[in-house]
Image (cartoon, rainbow, N blue to C red; front, top):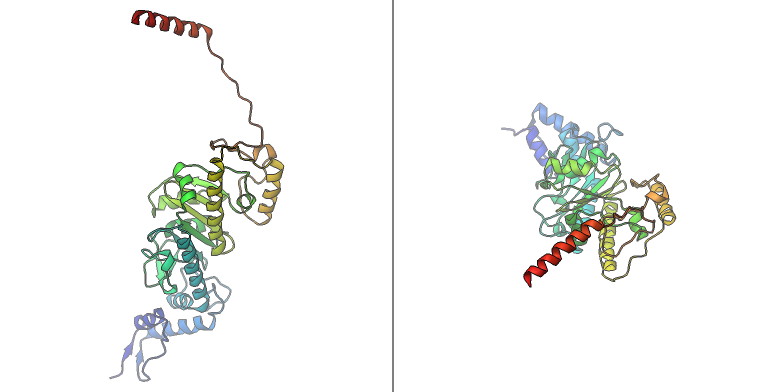
Length: 345
């Protein structure tokens, strides 16, 4: 009796990266199995057109693409190259001690409302391409044998709120996370690379992996590309690629470490002048990197009021009124003190 091949069996073969056409010649295909094979054939013809629906070239892949199309893309050379990039960035994060245990997560947008991301409960230093996951922007897993990262909702909120976000990176670099725990944005006007490539803000603490955490971070990504997550870590996004999102981490961590060393030298830091900072912001704007200081006047650019250890702004501080001591109150305090001393004698 000939074997009966169902759509579920065809999809299982595709999910494993096999050829679904390798079935017995006398096998009987159900109508849904034939549909699955047709979708697979269309997807294969357009697999080179990465990030688009193979059956309709030029139309981006989305959560509404057929399961066969999504599986073919997920197992395509184009997707494999991106998975390799995720593994590479994971190794860099682990090698620099920006993550511990199975902490940290990374994502790359690959369609209209879908993204590749790292799995949960796997050390970033030891991930393999086959560990990666495909999810839609609601966090539903569309492909991959391992479960997606539990914090993917934050990455997806960033991508939904910031259309330019191509890739996101989250980790726990010690010096930067120290600022996050203190609730402090690092002081400005000290190192050009930080001023040009990073734009930092602090998001309030919420339980990691919750929708609330993702929304609080997303509220800041219109004008900032690197977010300190209070009592947690850092997340960055890039309009270029995943390596650029990772670079934000290196730049921020090196900067935080440098200014903490500077603060220990016992000498006020030599900060940039407002015109010098304005030059850097012009470069930043030309690169398409957001910053809330774009368009501000020079006198408004440098504000390190919350930073205390040895850093003073090159822009003169606003004048403040000093309230003098009350002579009558002084005399009263002296009289009471004299009486108490006399009684003690």
